[in-house]
Image 1: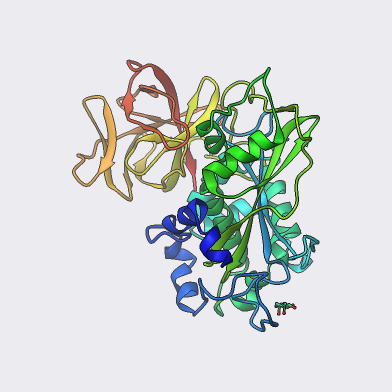
Image 2: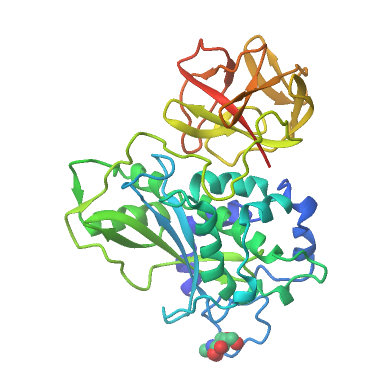
Length: 409
Ligand SMILES: *[C@@H]1O[C@H](CO)[C@@H](O)[C@H](O)[C@H]1NC(C)=O
């Protein structure tokens, strides 16, 4: 009964967005296909809905079967894109809303960025650098904390649940990949703006206006937390069928309300437009002068880093593509999963029919900038946000100008 009623738009989103996409480069190194074929069910009993004890906790999350995908709206200081909430984490509460934390200090990994990039999860890392950001710029410490505090409590991520021979930390790689993929199905900013609720320095909202809007968009009610009367955090609740690694998240209504008052709630804008940076923690940074073999390409505009290039060579704030770079800093070619990259006229693109052109790299401060025909200037007809993408042109003849920073993965 419960099911037929609850399966609505959020469930549909989750299903339409497979947690492990077949073209995820991850499968090359961290062998997710192996994990999936090892028999871990994506169906099976929904966590917190078992009527008798379940013995195999590798495919049934317990005791932390009430999962919260928590997101921040940080405005003081502002973090992350101005049109997106940012990731706080994924927390395994017990079914009665009590919880355990810090469950296995022997797996308190450090160097999460390196762990991810060494195990085929560079795309996940690139997304984390823009959307899972610490308010003080200490991203690496924030990620370590979220893993140690919450990830180590997940029964389905015990190393004994992974195939023998998995690299140390493989279960943490899976954790970060899953959190990013789940977050990408929960664009809270867009849900609110679709219902006419956008950040404002003057307006206030009632709690029921906010929850009604979010329920209208998703079919489910999240919990909202406030700080000094302003919206600051959201918790989207789920049960899980199967494992955190490859299971299905089943959305549910929040079993408890958050800390927001019933009225007078502020939803302030983030300051200064997009203020994401890739500094902080041990985010990979290009060593000036040295050209990486694999890189993501980030766009730096006057307001800071705003997304970067997708595999087709377009500009977006979605998960960035990994580019393969061949040659030297003074002359190299690039390919993405779509094909060769090149400039035709002033249009940059990558794809199977694209004629390769050569690029160079120019050191600017701590950045390694992409140059075409010796110029590091690129421009587009708009600034991307959400799911919009813009064609990248060389030179400054289009309205929104930026440089492209090559960051080793
Ligand atoms: C569900 O399974 C877990 C794990 O085996 C167990 O601790 C819990 O008591 C079970 N719940 C019920 C209602 O049997």
